[in-house]
Amino acid sequence: AQTVTQSQPEMSVQEAETVTLSCTYDTSENNYYLFWYKQPPSRQMILVIRQEAYKQQNATENRFSVNFQKAAKSFSLKISDSQLGDTAMYFCAFMKEGNNDMRFGAGTRLTVKP
Amino acid sequence: DAGVIQSPRHEVTEMGQEVTLRCKPISGHDYLFWYRQTMMRGLELLIYFNNNVPIDDSGMPEDRFSAKMPNASFSTLKIQPSEPRDSAVYFCASSKTYTEAFFGQGTRLTVV
Image (tube, rainbow over all chains, first blue to last red; front, side, top):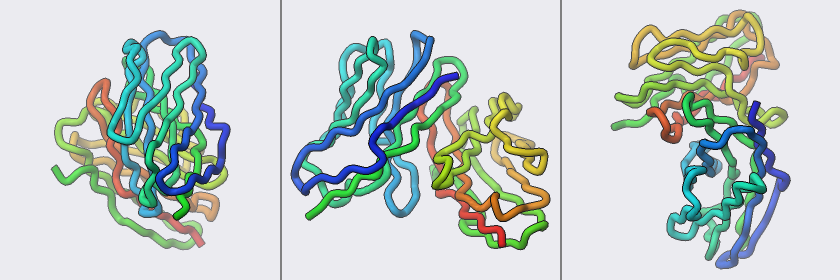
């Protein structure tokens, strides 16, 4: 079974600064997908970014980017120019190719301070 | 598309009562998932369906929990009888093959 580990239960960052959230995963699969979801206080789960394992290039979405290290099984999320609206729980997720079975880490609570 | 629609948004029930949570997935999505979120256990996958067929229900905690998907546009998660430890936020999500899951707003269940 695949496991996803987020070792930082809570983090904080000053507005406009950069923060990196960590995620590691364990799998014997070669083809898979990785995701970061954001859950603000409204509790809606919102997709932030996705990465296909077969792609070497790190995914980027505006202020959000990932550092995908396949050999190390690491998938960190970098948030640049942090904004107050980035305050949320962030979940890392793994999906094996072929069955859409998505597994989540425990989450990191990020607080952006003014 | 309106997204994944869950009802009710909030449910308060007494221990021992039957609870039914409902979900309408996004049209055209062939996967449907039920997750439970608690502070202690985080997001747990309870069961998922592919083309209306249950594929993996190993996350269903007990026989008190059951889920059905009678057609491509509707699914239910039923708890009978409910217990206080079932209190949680229950999410329904749907996806197409090889794509990310889209989540509903969740149902906050409180069993007193």
